[in-house]
Length: 438
Image (cartoon, rainbow, N blue to C red):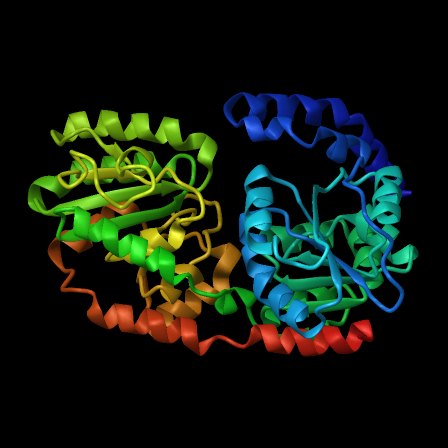
């Protein structure tokens, strides 16, 4: 009955969701694409899976999940090279990331996941013809998982994590979450704390394997790009605000102004990379206004700072005190250019962003009090000396100005922390391989 009510409410919300996509499409035209897939399950054509082969369907909601599951997907594709693939996501940035990461997979097709209605799920499962469905981290869509399971598809929740908010909701809506969890063929968690939440709901986990994000392959070409940026700037110190969320940029700019950061650090530069591309223009205007108040030059944009197709800096970039990182897929380059990263999403109650990638590129992390989405990773990074925690951005800026004595030890700690937690891919592969009967 509760699942039926959920489906009815979601069906009635379809016009609201359409209006939401229209609104997002004004600022981000990519949201105008894929409506037939989202609302009608009109997917790209899938060939019949040859006898003796399998098709694996991977659903990664957006950029973070797409990167997180990539080590396991690539390893699986090497071992089972004849398996075919279907990859779904929810956001345009997720789609672009999936196409970049997985274009080389055998027989791969990409599509936007239809909304979680029984008739759309049935159409999707029938068209995709997958033998296995992998969902990543927190994607517990009731109709999708129950419908796929009933159709004989082996379902797996991989790299599973549970934030405090998600945990409360799972318990609160146990009448829906319990049967969904019971329907899973395989459940692999990041940490023992994550596993405890699922087990309290009556679903024993198959294994605790660690975080797949530690195994994401490094991109040396982006490291080289970051070093080219560093050579092009005259700044001796570069602070990166990585994956900042709405409202946090204003807090940083206010903190820089209040502590007279640029006056006291005449050879420093601050780079801001917003989490969501539709906010690039908004954040740039905030930075321009702040630059006027602080008496520094107008900020520059990464997209307008280099000649197309080269790393030759345009006039004005070298002297820039404020830089907007308005590009996608270049976070490793930003981490490579910076002395340290202020962790976006942790200064307001968003739960923090992925700090593992920063450490993998040797960039120490300074974070705020809100890291509940990555609690274990944050605690481990603090213990390893790869991260510091501050109550607010002004405190972080003041520490940088008055007590910060350098970064080499923290860089080494960041590298060691990232390398020391690798191995989740092989562990997850072994468990999934056994449970899926491959």
